[in-house]
Image 1 (cartoon, each protein chain N blue to C red):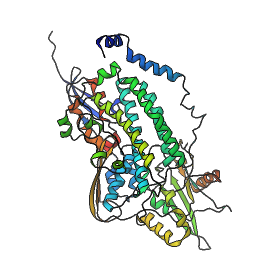
Image 2 (image 1 turned 45 degrees about the vertical axis):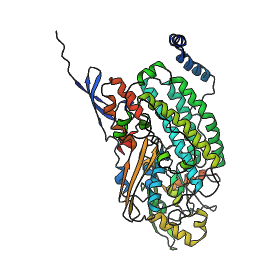
Image 3 (image 1 turned 135 degrees about the horizontal axis):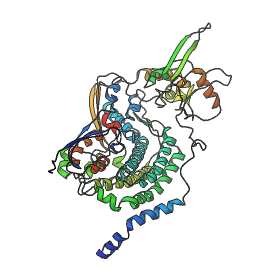
Image 4 (image 1 turned 120 degrees about the vertical axis):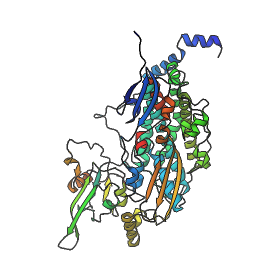
Length: 155
Length: 391
């Protein structure tokens, strides 16, 4: 760059003008921001959101209470307690996921041997109380019912 | 009246916006000149190394996401390679390429956020608006590939967790074709800007020898002109099969470190494009029954596989006694995992050599004699993430 050119570029703030040119050009672009609570992002089906328990087509729960999801969980946030039914099958007394401890790594879904546990595209999990973030079996089954026939996260 | 010159002690952080997290600096100031600077760490300590001793090797992968939470793909990769080296596992070729793609996408997203915050610290807030636009696209790509935007947990021991879909490949290729023009836009905004140049050129100079003596790695080392990149020096994943250049600085000041990190993003685009060109078809998980979980369809079909699945999930796989150190080139520098195994299914000891922690040692040397405002550009230039400094 010659001395004169450099002098002219310095006094006319050339590099600032170049930057401003980009700014003005971008003003006519389509905005990339979303008006979030009104416009929700489209989440891909593989997304790892809130867990769900699935049912068989006849309405029976798929979960066999083997406890593999609880064993595989890195944070141990799944709590299962079982008892025996009169017909000697296994009954689930408690199935809870402490969503506040959950990492959403999806290992529980990988561990489930019967594809009873899955992850859904629910991502708005904020709440005012800690108690409401302890997801019980009924809540997880209800979430599963919302996703019947839809593709969800399987490994 | 005679004025007396007296040094004062100032506390900067841990809640200072430009210390990039919870870094606390104790500064001795003579007027506005820094006489000495002492970083105080530990505000984000979570005891990850100790936690790893109570987890199976598989369960540690999500833990590694939390070290450098801006480039999770790289952390998973470094950890997985360390365990694989300890066990002598060969990874399928397609998995190697997918790992490289995820590692380089993480590098770009990490550098984009670094550029945003570094420029914003110095006063050019505009760059943040542009870089976060592209980072969002990368996060969406991650979500499409792995299911998560930030803590991907994608790289697994023996491969990767899921294969790339044609939709991901198409969208990633499209992004890669548009991205180099965006890097030029960032350069237009700040590269020649006289305020940016004035605040970065000649600031925080680390010479060639000093950079080696301090044990710097990554962009901070290469900014001083030292040609050392673990992707070239000790190739892992598919880095020995792709071509790329290692950008080097000359003077070792803040401006040089900025230039080479921007250039690294261009090289990452080159690497990803080559990966898509060369990526073969095939499995993405190593076919080693003692390590990889069997396919879900077979688990549901026959009882032997189901029994094997139960054992592998509930107990985890065991690793023969031994020790290993593996270093990988993450966006911040050399991330090393030193793992000692006693033959059980969880490590006896896992030491993490985190690049941010080592690079941060150099900060008192960098800022000595500079003005107090230059501390901000120096912290920005060594690119620290406090999650990794304190672990």
